Picture 1 (cartoon, rainbow, N blue to C red):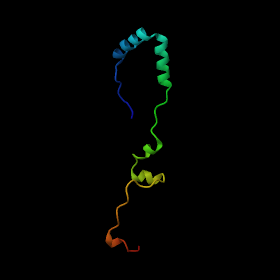
Picture 2 (tube, rainbow, N blue to C red):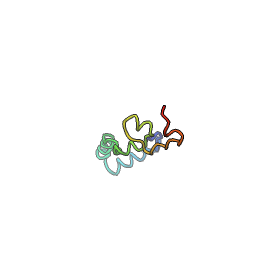
Picture 3 (cartoon, one colour):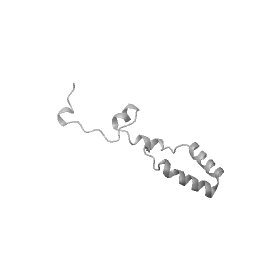
Picture 4 (cartoon, helix red, strand yellow):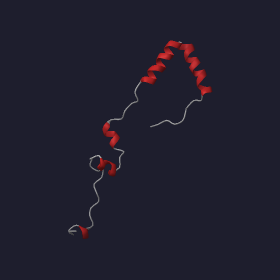
Length: 81
């Protein structure tokens, strides 16, 4: 999920940051912010990533389709082309 909007504007976030620095100290706030920026984004398990693909994409990478293919019409089952 990509967050496109900023939940706080600059004018709203500065007083909150100043309050954190005042209560916790500048060094602690800086270290926490730096660690938060360096922490890798959580990854979904590999199997969960493939659940969202449609059958065409699954076939392209060699996976079986999610649903069984529809049955052939009765008139076409024994016809040779």
